[in-house]
Length: 364
Image (cartoon, rainbow, N blue to C red; front, side, top):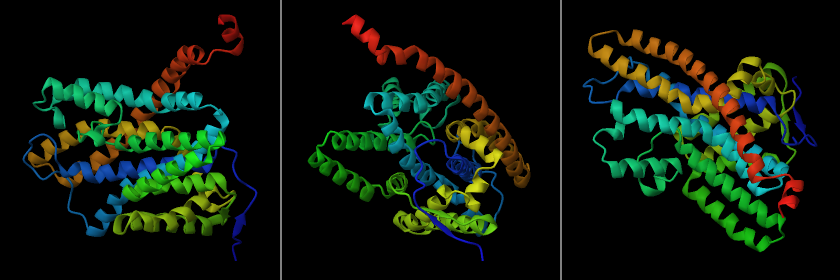
């Protein structure tokens, strides 16, 4: 019988966890898979055809279509990592500075590109847009206020960043008041958090990550048995999110994350493979960049199917070319923006915003 270890006293210190990096890869790839199903259905320009998605069995469509729930995996990861990150920084300004450096460069580069190219190619809401609406949508999306203002979402996947920033701000406020000893002030913040969870149930998955950042509980089922059980929990999680209320997915999500963090578990070992580690490393770029890469392929496929090209051929080419191009573009984005541009911005602004103590004393 394969031993099942419930680990205690193994809480991570907020450092690098390979299995979490691998889970990032799964989250990004599952969203990519969902768009391989969704984008070929059409809805671009005014091309009069039903898309180039071939006839698929309903169960196959259902399996592919659950990929969008990779978002919940990202939320669990953020809930797990952000508390440790805030404790390490020990300073809200430094914490938010690093969050801006982590999130904004790729987003802003793509944001600017979209608002330059979008009107030229007539992408979605840009067709016939007036200057006032253009500026309003530009600013609302830049500051993640598009939902609150009832305006269109510009970047297809960037809606999740609204939730991410809201979580960063909320947790930072709770951290600040608790550290300052103002426990009574934390009560309304906790109530606000509960209200948000009830109104936006998807945000409950931040709570799973936060829970594991505070407790030592881990599940380690080694070998193939552990991998099988982990995959089963993942399947139940995705099915629960698709068929039922998000709260139903909290239990399988909890068990899944416990196995992801369990040292020596079959699931953790599988997530720590080199291929998934690399995809996990570029996962943020992959998540934001791939709709930009898939869009021209989508438009091309819609035009070719109208000319009579076989849908199976077009869909297969869309998946193969889309995968290669998305991974290549994401690798380039990671190296040029997430690494080099981020380093330049860090060097340019960190010293200005957080000067060494000696320089502060001299200036005084």
